[in-house]
Length: 254
Length: 254
Image (cartoon, rainbow over all chains, first blue to last red; front, side):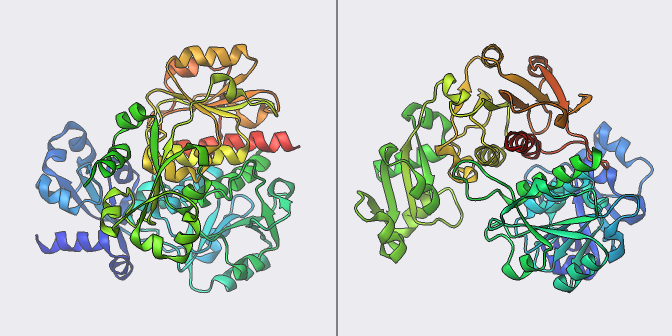
């Protein structure tokens, strides 16, 4: 395995390396097609992919390296690699970018989210719901985790996000900027659909197993509940986020 | 490995065996605690679990077998087994049970769902939204798949479901029973929030990759769209189902 291949493997496997290099690896046709051209640092394709009609079309006019199918399998994070990957530069966003410009601010605030697939799915749903930005606590799973990237289905390239070094402070900054903060909380007494989400708003979503910590929930302007039938104790974090975001989207359309 | 252990492994791994035996394996404290006592056929615990205070309390007064921790690991479908599993009898539901009794019928119709975790998550969200029953096409992933079971978080014990041998026929029966059927469809022009879901209703949700097949979508009374911002092509099946079910739940509360 040569240096370049070791570099890719390190980026796939280690959050620390991704941070140091300010880069990450994307895989597959869809993530490759949607990657912003000015952020792509390196392209690697498998022999079979290059030979395929589709591969040839996708790679036309681009600089890329070819590796054997077996090497590609080693480099890939998936069980059935599609034969195309790229190293992409990370995109730093400012706090202000989370607030959006063209529409009233609409944020997600994610506290200590741990499941890579969940985080990616939430980002995908967030783009669809029209979220302007995502603020994450620094103990959330790495957004550049390969599984998270896959689950975003490309939303990673388009939804502004900030991993906060001062989570409580940034939440206060949001509030000062006129954003109402709503904490999804099982102990709340107000149902989520009662609030006006046409105004600048942010939903706070907690850890999969434990929900929002008390300290973070205490920062919210309002605690809201998603009423539940049956004996279900809670929704998973991605579901709860989706219910809230699409209620806001619905209100904003009407 | 003895006969009993082989039997458990077969149930864990093979949908065919689960069908033949009309049984399935549940794992973990939560699924064990919530299992209906009259359906539990066999309980197996690891040595460490039996010795733990919590394990002793959970198992008190019950008949169970003890196996070594290493055997338990072999029997378990999870990477970090909790030390408790049970074989549970399947519960057959009738078509009529899907319609519910205490409230207006509220169904999910799932076509060719393939992801085990997705299916389980959908069932969990369905219980929370107050769904009266789930109708599944026979090519859906097995609801008794270990990963599906885990993702239901116990909803499997409580939400009536039928795997249909005559999917189109059963959808027609639903319609004759006065249930309006709504197909989530990217080609629809009507936004989902326009319909009245206080009346008996059913949402049709399609395969993760391809959505509803044209034949199945054609059976729906109405095709509905979840409007999406950004460049997202679609929501994942569990997300789409959640948005629709919780809109119905919201309407039914108000």
